Length: 176
Image (tube, rainbow, N blue to C red):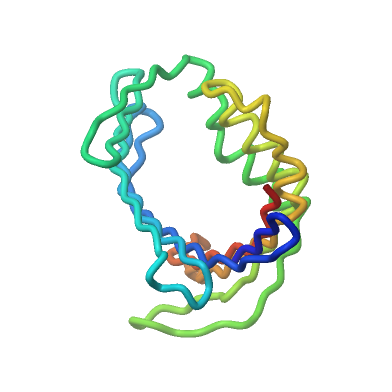
């Protein structure tokens, strides 16, 4: 939930975003479907819904929103900035991680872990990923992430030590 302040008044906005996708970093391809709903609190009639299809293929990103496709060229350095393992290790080492307990599902044992990322490391990681392909210089990502509370709850398979399910929650304050 976000709180917007404009001309001395405050508006609370609920924003829900859902996404699902498949990524192939070695093949440099991806497909994502994203849906978002934004609604001022107690004003269902003013809700705004949006959906987008995103494809990455052959050095370009294709985004379909409102029925029309927009192609963007991806630079080679964009792929180099996607070193997810190194970024994940850095972020995990500098963040709050707590074991909440364990559970069983489908005959398998799972650890339940809460993960709260360090906002400055997260901001730097996003800037590295976006900055090489998109102009983010007018965006103050550090200020944005200082106003963000981001929580991940992960279900980690005890035998494989891999996350098999996750839930993310983000609370933020946006000042126009």
